[in-house]
Amino acid sequence: MIIISNYTRQYRTAVILSVCVLLSSCIGSRTFPETNYYLLAIPDHAQAAPADPLIEVQSVRLPPYLDRLGIVLVNEGRQIQVANYHFWAEPLDDAVARILQDELARSWRGETGILDVDIHFFHGDLPGLVTLDTSWAIQMNCDELVSSRFRHTLGQPSSGYFALVETHADLVMQLASAIVNSLESQGVCTSQLIGSPSP
Image (tube, rainbow, N blue to C red; front, side, top):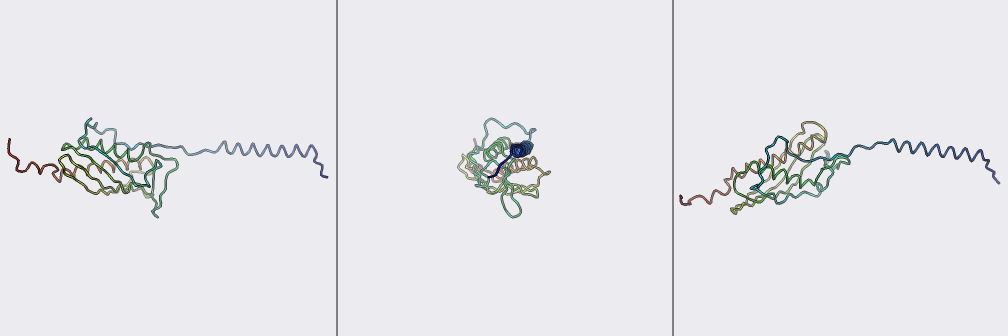
């Protein structure tokens, strides 16, 4: 029969309590990175868009790897890295549609139409490059269909997620400019005027 003295019990209790206090202090002092949310936006100095845009952005479709709020990076091995503490403040397809709508409203003064965009790739990589690869099509109200492919890569102006998000926005604005340039260069909805009688 083993007899445990009161002193031994008290000693064990003191040791257990000390361990518990130590563990709780370690857990309590542990700090986690701050969670950040980013809004994809055009520069503040940009001119306000007209209330009634001529080109309506009907849809922006994302590939499955981008259908998430965590900001996506791709490493050299083509592996996806989703940020744990850096998130889009809204779904990425909604953000792209909003910027496209504003930019097209500011820069297009032709016929009305409906735009659909399919995004194939839109992400940054570890060296600091951001790539946007899309296909787009506009059904004009004059029954002409205009479509094209846009692929471009931009380097971040600096490191970090703020610069990464800024570069994403720059690429969407470049996409809007490319769409307008394509419409203007093709003379959309002007063929129906050829041979029409003079007033």
